[in-house]
Amino acid sequence: MHIMSKYDMVQSLMQKMTAPGRPGPSNNAVTVKPPTMNLTAAELRGVRYGDFSLRFTPSNLTFSPPNWDKIATKRAPDHPDEYYFDRARELARKVFATGEHNEEESRALYRGFISSVSPDRKAIYEETMARTGGKMPASSMFWDHEGNRTLSYEYDYGTYTAITTSNEFSRARALSSVYLDEMNKLYDKYGAASAGHISLDRIHSDLRSESRASAPSEQGIAVDISV
Image (cartoon, helix red, strand yellow):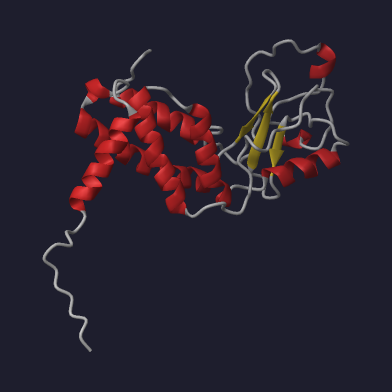
């Protein structure tokens, strides 16, 4: 098992937390894609990735519909912010203890936290597909009514990417700050050599001991209950 340094853990976190999409421009410029793989000439005919003028032009691309459980889209909050902050702290403890990335858990946590400020990518996708007769648009990209890019279909790989908005990025940074603060405390408390070599039970036990030690003592407190 490869144990990451503190710097590596922080950088890895920031990379995966601000993806499944990075902040992208809102203009209508054509985006350059890497060479295509396993696609026929018929499928690629007329396809120009990121071309705004082709946003409602149907293509012959073979595709699967997006899994909205894996993509941030507008949703009412399921929990208060403090719930996500507690989950982020616990995730930091788990990552510190195991040295594992826990990417699926991380992404699910961030999707839940940022979705309250996400664009309604599902509605945008469905509106576009209605305009194209259920075919993937030749642009392989989905814009909102203001011309902002919100979602792209990576036809080389058959995957969708949410193009993160500034509001989503700011909210993700707030959760990252909580995570990184907890991670810094763990490194300061246990040292870098303990990363990946300490049990999560030990961390929990230490937290309980510290909580008991910091609780106010009830001994010697006189309470006047006279009327």
